[in-house]
Image 1 (cartoon, each protein chain N blue to C red):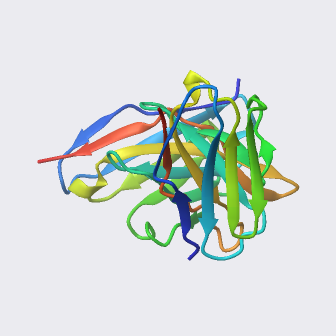
Image 2: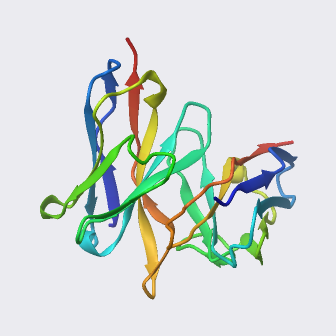
Length: 122
Length: 109
């Protein structure tokens, strides 16, 4: 079964750092882009960025460039999203998702992780 | 930056009836459009990509249409499990962009 399994919920204080993860299985992890999507409480979906685990090529949404870092370790089929200094406004559910690809063209996010809830509060 | 606008924000429809959800792009995106369904407490699920291609395992009552700037998701004969929030998303490889609309909540009338 193709799946993405994310790390568990986190509760952090403003200014702290954090790294959450997304482990792929059931497919060739290095052959598909992985994206991260934010969903703030009661709000819609926002694309944050994507990474190609095969060579760690990374692209960020302009809205999130410089705010987060996306990385991947292909040896353990895991992609990560990290913050160096959290803010209360980073409180949200974060999803990783695999990009469906056809003929070398990236399409939509076809497989989603279960989400990681990040709460930032003093 | 392309802006995706969905309408209506909320749609009330009875079971067994047809629902039509709209999505508009601020400029042409050809057919690079996907639809997702999200139920409370769950991750989104891909329904449609390429404006009209159903994803694996998606029932035939879900259909997508449109091109350029105007797109529609139609759900024929609504089932109880179809009441959820639906998002459209445009995708582009270069520059990379995977922008979502703000969502349409489909509720039981």
